Image (tube, rainbow, N blue to C red):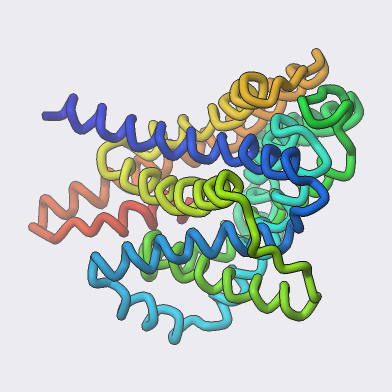
Length: 336
């Protein structure tokens, strides 16, 4: 039974990782197939609209829709803030970045977010710094700087990547870091599933307002294969990936689940080479090692502490015969 749970947990974590890694390739494909027609803001709205419909359907099936509205009423402005930085900011910037740079470089720059998460937590949440975090931060930033300076690599759609796309991807990482730190409170209070659903739905509404206010070109006449691409990004890269990731925490330790996050960039590189025929330079591979090594150094201590908190919680449940709430396990992971 223990082995079966472990296999199930690893399968769920792997599905989430593959979904996230494929996001950059599918996004690049959308711009490559129809660069002039695709508007980044409206396209991001479509992506999250698909994700919102998925979560609404899921919460309705689970009977948790009243909890979702209750959470929004009690923490309206916090969810608006999280929707702005985590959906509008991160969503538009990372999708826009795919227009100007390759999928592999976009993934590398965007996944620098753990570095900015630690930095923001230190500046605004009083989190302590240590030699591991500082070393990891320098190594990660150095790796991305090397990737930008190298400016190498090309795919089937363009002859060269652009520094504008790299900077947009880094900006999306900063927004995701702000979302991660800012969302700790509501995640602990309502659980990851409810919180994620409310943030995505709120962010989708804000994206709709942004499309209207800025008079972005509305493109409803979309070909079937492009519509399927948007549906994939919304349902899989946003919906199913989140659910699989957090459910995996019920079967694996937080550190074991977190290890799958390290291969996301590597999978993005593999997918981009296979499906987009991207060619990468030696400087990019060196940058990849630096970024992954830096993220590992910064997160290793957190994984150990998170494992201990989750195990202590489960032991207390068994000792006092308390109900094991799976959302508490999710909250412990995100708290750190």
